[in-house]
Image (cartoon, rainbow, N blue to C red; front, side, top):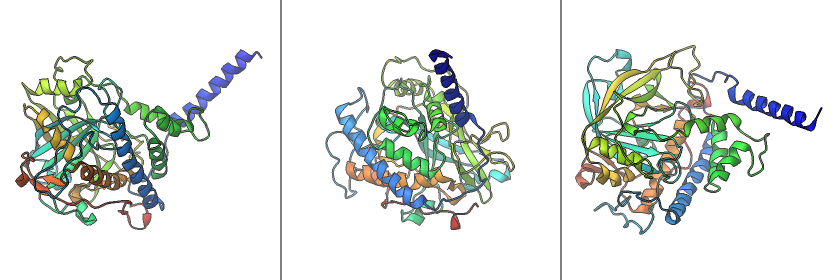
Length: 430
């Protein structure tokens, strides 16, 4: 056999091995929650890595600013909140989803006549709430919009009465309910051990090498015995080309939530009707924001806010977010309408930079479940506390759209968090 034939056979074998690990059927995970024994310990490591990423991102952006971003100062100190003035220069941003495309005012409208199995929390009765929506890109520091990336949609509903879950962690009461979505149906990490390994690699330095260290098992020399081919394939699926318009994009919660005492669900926000995108220069590094501004200068937009109920006997696990819940098994059901009126929003950039969007800003009827949501509580709280203290920004939850008015902002203290508090007694399936 010739050397060329041997190389060809070896190449085919490598492809088949990779395909086996990537496309093999996933075993069914538990329908409920399961907390691993080392979760608190690893969560502390993940929080430390996330804070390190905030510092690295700030240093990078100070040396490599993105032209035209932000449209104005990304933060400003609020009056009369007892905080130091914001530092000069590059502000501290989120560890991921650092780039804000738009901070929009919206109405969250719950209609009459919903099925009784869904009437819990904000869906309990007909109502209309004011809300803020932050559209974002997923990378650690702002990139040109033409780059492949995940896109996010974070919703903060205001004037929502009731005790919130974060009060159990020492956070004072607030009248808000948050939902956090992205434009993918699957995540690429399935458990806390893998997430800790991924964030450790990611926080070792910005750039391709840090990410490839985890996915290929080594960089620049891969180690197939330590590699994660399925995770790499799923991660590449989340890095999508830029859409024509974020207002025409489908968003999903990816992770699961309770809806009332029994039902587990996932959320989605889908455009009511996909209108043509406004014509803008797509070579502009911030064309997604400019497209939204051009669209909303003359017309509104809307999304249907929907839930996908978990079906017993189907492969719809809570803990493993790498498994997509099939819409054939369980279609999404619309429960509310997000109505975005025509508006000028670029002056609101400071608002969303100073807000914290956390799925645990929530009524118990919408409790986040699964490992990725438990990690979010610790990471989001600590990153929010860290960056806002560094920026001299207020720690507050808005009462209404007039967030720049101190009377419309509830100042709250966010406590440091270095480990998650398990939500499942004894670490057993629930």
